[in-house]
Image 1: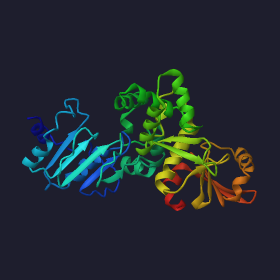
Image 2 (image 1 turned 135 degrees about the vertical axis):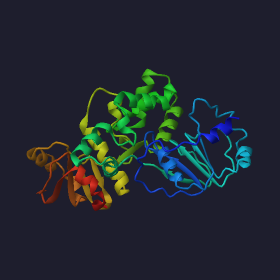
Image 3 (image 1 turned 30 degrees about the vertical axis):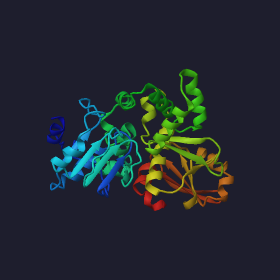
Image 4 (image 1 turned 135 degrees about the horizontal axis):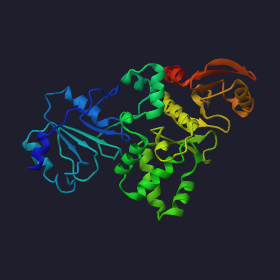
Length: 353
């Protein structure tokens, strides 16, 4: 019987290494986040330490399965076998969930299910990346920039990353939407602008476009940053993997990549409101902090850029200039500023809360 074979093939963790994340699981859990974040490995490691549970694991992306037909008897089977825990990977609502003491669902999309505890798995911060890989600090930063911030990042090159995204978005329309969103990484843009551009090349309904974009946002695969005090203006678009654009374009824009890197450290490390302005890459109202992302700077260029910042001085107590490896301190028109390498900022981000 198929379900018996699935029960007997409960997997071990795919990798001995594991994410350095707290995992406050309850009886009914929904684990979600983008592809390549180590969600499944994290869950398998967690439950490996609870041998008393009789466990069953189902991967709905397994090509040998038909999710619409194969699990009609899942409730009676689990009762017969006294299953304590069912893990459903790549979950989609194909069938009614069985009533069990423990259920853990894993998906990119946080489908709404009553009484489930939702846990978002974030991408790797630079600090976690360094802790896992144990590279020398300079080497860690080079690898982080090259391979990105996914748990599985070093197993992908740019081509494999694009192919992997195409595999999880087999619908050509959804993949077309995703690709066009990714190509706007770091730009000030509106969804309507992207929709009109796609519509020129392919047949696409507005409802389908906005629904798919909403799913990506709920999954925390993409993020929109508002312009400060201009809620209706075009927003800046960032992704959970800052190297994604390299997988879809031969053009390289290191500044956009660097800016996306910084955004993710801010978003997950500080958990406070983030805006941009005409002159600042990021503004944090709770910290009265203005941030410029300048991976490579010359002092004269920096002073000229700071001189042009006028209105923002009304609400910024200090400026932080993030670079690849330069550091220093100074003052411009009465406002103090700090120049800091990205690695120092990322490893001490709690200082800015």
